[in-house]
Length: 435
Ligand SMILES: Cc1cc2nc3c(=O)[nH]c(=O)nc-3n(C[C@H](O)[C@H](O)[C@H](O)COP(=O)(O)OP(=O)(O)OC[C@H]3O[C@@H](n4cnc5c(N)ncnc54)[C@H](O)[C@@H]3O)c2cc1C
Image 1 (spheres, helix red, strand yellow):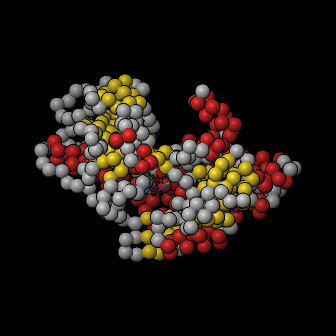
Image 2: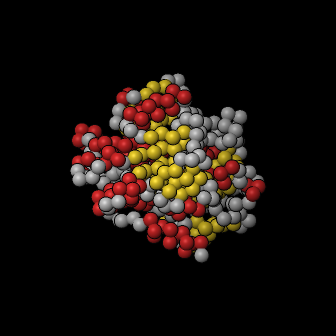
Image 3: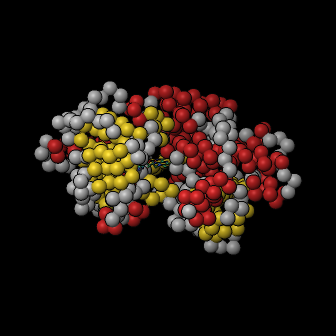
């Protein structure tokens, strides 16, 4: 990999997401050599992916070059590499560009969509975890309307304009709200010769309330906001399968829809060599102690979505969200330095700063540890927090300008089919991978 030998210990971080970047920043001025490996050369700000999918933002404005985050630090090395295996016995990592030795390894590989083994949904449904997936969804949504304009078959036209979003967490709620706004404000102008009032947005939640991780008040209010926007909220229904045209459920309800978005589960991204049953917990997460050490492995740590730290307050691990990942990255950075200086490490304590979700223009719900509020003020708070945590001044500025423009003009100008998406190709790709 052409990384010079150093007298300082080498910390290899796999993953430049929220956790990996926070850790690398923390170590950037310390007496260690930091090697960050990621299969992408950019950090992906996942909370705003739904805005890319719905034409509200360009993908570039939510991605940031990893190399730029730590420019100017002589002890920092980035390599664009897909990690393939960890050999803990020799402390080596195998990647698609070669092997590397580590003194300390930090796994920060995040999570991926969990289809719970349902091949129909996996191959014919859409996920929204990466920028390419969001661009695929954007293309599919727009292509559906172009197609709906051409067909004389009313049944087919309705299916093209019928959207099923599975999962009533923040991702599902935010996507449903954005689609409803497009239906109301943009489709009638873009497609004056199509009866876009027939478009349906269905949000399906298996449990009794949407946003189950938030307060009951937030759930109630978010549901009310969605209904005001014309979203059909279905609760206590479980989607069982999808053949690309029909969504079946555990009830008699069936949806005829050309688009199904699966936002109903994630699982940790595992690495070969760290996949022993004794290392893993629910959702494929690596079991770690209060210092982020993978239980049973020397010199291996995990942070963020991939780590499961069971504490009294969080018996099932911390929420798979950006805040825990960032706080864990910072805490581990301190502990690695303490370890090298042979000082005792400090256990990680998560400071819950609250959670929030937006449903649309002037409509958001915010649960802070001491206050809960909903509506216009919550929406401004949501925007401010997301701008604050975006990496890079240019990205903040571009997103801010876009939001102001979209607010004033009731518009979303990134509704572009840059790379057409064919569902059939996705099915073929899956088949090839399986064969
Ligand atoms: C649509 C969506 C909306 C969300 N909204 C919110 C929100 O509003 N608020 C919130 O707090 N959280 C939100 N989250 C969750 C949040 O984004 C994650 O919890 C957070 O990204 C986890 O950080 P991480 O560092 O663990 O992993 P990630 O940020 O996912 O980073 C993992 C990195 O590892 C890299 N990687 C993975 N495998 C390999 C490999 N084998 N080799 C090399 N590199 C690899 C990936 O390329 C990636 O860069 C959302 C997530 C999604 C998908």
